[in-house]
Every structure is written in C-alpha cells, then in structure tokens.
Image (cartoon, rainbow, N blue to C red):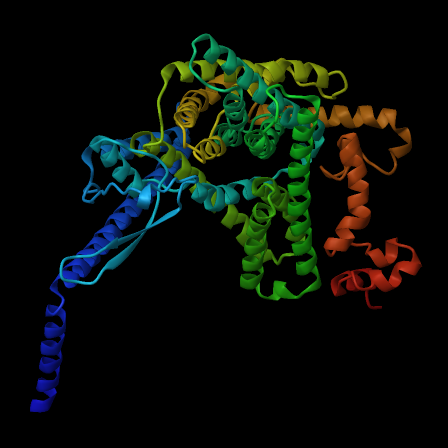
Length: 609
C-alpha cells in the first residue's frame, strides 16, 4: 500500500528537479502554452460571436417573411448587424489586444525580392536552450503603434481572402446553377447571354474609362489598368436581395429570368475579365492589336475551358450514378454528389482556369442529368443542403462585409473616389441596358418593355463576388482604396436598392402575384397560337396544351437545336431516359451502346411479357 503512494510522489519530485534544472526554458514554455490557450479562447469567442449573429439573422429573416416587412430586406439588416459587431470589436477591443509585437529585420540586410509567406522566430532565454516559433505573415506594413494595434484587431477577426474563394463562394455559385429554373431561363437564353457577355464587358470598360477620366482630372494617381480592374470586379452583380423580393412578390417570370440569369452568369464573366486584366502586360506603352487579340483569346480560353471542365465533371458524375447502384445507399450517394461538385472547382483552380465558372456549369449539368439518377432521398437532401448552405454563406458574407468596415486594416477610404464610382457604375450600367435592349427587341418576341429595362438598371446590386475580388490583393494604397470603395458600394446598393425594390416594382407597375400569373398564362396562349399559325405542320405533334418546357418552339433557336440533341443522345447516355442508345443509334454501334445502357433502361425498353 505504501508503495502505491510512494511512486507518484517520487515521479513528482523527479519531474520538479528536471524542470528546475532549466528554469529559463521552462518559463518560456509555460508562457507559450498560456499564449496558445489565450489564442484558442479568443478565436472561439470570435467564432461564437459570428455564429450567434447568424442565429439572430435567421430569426430576423423569419420575422421579415412572416410579417411581410419590405421596407428593408434581411440582407440589409445582416449588413447592419455586421457593422454593429465591427464597431464593438474595433472600439471596445473585447480583449483582443493582449499580444506582443516585435520589429524584425532581415539578417545581413538581405534584399527581399518577394514578400515572405512564413516566419521562423528563434528565441533564446538566458540560461536555457533556444525555442523556435512559426508564424504566418499577414500582408501589410505598419510603422506606428496605432497601426500595430489595428493590425492585432484584424488578425483576430478577419479571414483570409482565400477562405472566401475556396470555401464560401463555391457553394453559392453551385447552388445558382443547381437551382436554375430551366424553362424561363432557356426561353430568354439569347437575351441573358447578350447581357452577360456584352453587357458585363461594356460595364467593365465603361466604368474603367469614366473613372480614369475622373481620376486624371483630379490627379488622384491611378493607372488605367488599376481602374479597368476595378471596372471588372465591380461589374459582378449579386442581386440576392432583389431575387428574394421577386420570389416573395411572384413577379413576372421573364423579368425574373433576365435578372436571375444575369446574376448567375455574370459573376463568372467578371472574374475571368478581372484575371485577364490583372495578368495583362505589354512590352510597349501603347496597346497594339496583337495585345488586344491576346487578351480576347485569353478570356475565351479561360472561360470556355472552365465551362467545359465543369460541365464534363458534372456529366461524369451523372454517368457514374447511372451505371452504379449507389442509389441504394442515399448517404453515400449524397456525399459523392457534394464531393465531386466541389472537385470541379478545385480542378479548375489547379489547372489555371476559373473555379467559379467551372462549379457554376457543373451545377447546371448536375441539375439537368445527375439529379434524374439520384434516389428520392438524395434528390431532397442535395436540394435542401445546397439551398441551406448557400443561404448561410451569403448571410455570413454580408455580415462579414459590415464587420470589415471597422476591423480590416487594408481599407483606405476616399469619399471622392466613392462618389465617382457610384456615378460611373450607374452610367455604365445604363450604357448597356437601354441600347442592348433596343437591339434585342428587333428580333425578340416578346419584347423587353421599358419597365423591365428600368428594373434591370435598378437591380445592379453588388455583393459577395465583388467584395472577394477586391480583397484578394490589397498590397498598395490604390488597391486598398479600391477595396474600401467596393465595400461601400456593396453596402449602399444593398441598403438603398434592396430596400426600395418592392416600392420600385409598384412604381414601375410591374405585375406581381395573381396579376403576374394571369399575364403569363395569357402570354403563353397568345404565343402558342401565333406559333401554331406559323408552323401549321407541327400542330398535330405539338399541341397548345403541352406541358411547360416540353415544347421545342417554346425556346430560342440555339436552345431548340440543343433540345433535340440532348433528348436523342445526351439524356439516354447520362440518365435512365428512354429510348436508350441501343434503340436510337445504328445497329453497328451495338457493342458500344450496350456498355452505355443501364439495366433500368433495358427493363423499361424491353418489359417482360
């Protein structure tokens, strides 16, 4: 019994003797452990604050929807919550300033050609052995004490820009493609693509040129390339607020499709434009025709390469779910769906393409093909999961935008630059909305009415993508001003445009609710009748009462051609649709088509007698 008590006491004595032999090193170790514990506690407090605010945001969103409050949208309230939290963190500290700061110079005055990524700091206390610490460096240079205090606040409450691009943005973009309402989207596909490609390009160069004129007149010291980059990133619209109001008010379907289609696709165009502009360099002072052609080729290569990669990965997952029996295990099936969807983003980034474009079109392909192969449980799980995670990410980003106004130290405010930006953004958007609508209306049926055009102009809110692009590089004072201005533009457009959306719908006399449904039915009947008169040979095969989306004349020319190819080849290849490829392709293809046909397709095509 005595031996049982003696052993722990002996071990304790030996331990104390060993520790006492190196008091200096022990003190430093203990201090490092206390420091790590304090950092862990403070990080937990910050995360708890964000999560608690998210809970309040969800409850607020419910209250606004339940009581039909439309004077301000929940996105605006989320921004307000973020501003409030940022104000508290910035001016009350919450214990974030308990840290030490050292000025470190390079050994032997070595010339640093590139900024370091990590720092190894070796500390040697008196009478003890050296201890090494590993630090990750944060971009920026601060000279005075006040700046160092602000940097310490930023380190605790600000996320890396790469977190936005790699973790927060992909689910939002994927959900935009996965939840796409195909019928009205493809009916308006020509107009949507014109607005996305031509409109976003005009907005980019229009904003850049106007800002260059303003900054040159007032000698603000910005290069044309910097302002063109600002024009590209600020052209990314994010009308989450307006789309939510449209859903609540049930506005006219074609207007919804035009604005949603632009928001779903122009983020991809804006990010590719910004990357091409940022990577663009010329050997001469003047931009030659060769330089201009190289930029266009680079844009086309990155955009369409990313498109094909994402669409291909989506089709691969569709074929995988078709040819396996993984639908018998919904948990594994849903997990595979989520992981492969995220892989489309990562592969594009690794290949030097744009993950945003890739994951968007992966979502469109998965909604069109893979979704049909999933079990009922997995269909419900994936729809609800991406809708939920998209809502959470968007709410968090809007909250974080408000927080960053007070705690981010890489924002340099210029109210004159902000004023010029608001003028340039509005003018550039009007510069493509009205002329482009006039050109489209020459052949378009039905035409884009003036009230639609005014609403499209008004719907140019900026959001998560513009903020993330601007915050990715803040190494210079000009870039810091661009970041701060982008943040302010997001806040102004969400609060003002988002808050006045319902009023603008009423003011422009845009039909909504029952009126919109009746107008849509009337338009459907009139278009079906007119098409029936023009194509009398199709009257027997395409009845007026055909289910929505099944009528090939209900779509534009290019989607109509794709419709036939998709129905006859792509869907039989990637889903369990019938007739199968064994029945539609020539007999000599049978060895191949038999490998591409699922047992379910054969069971439907050849039912037992």
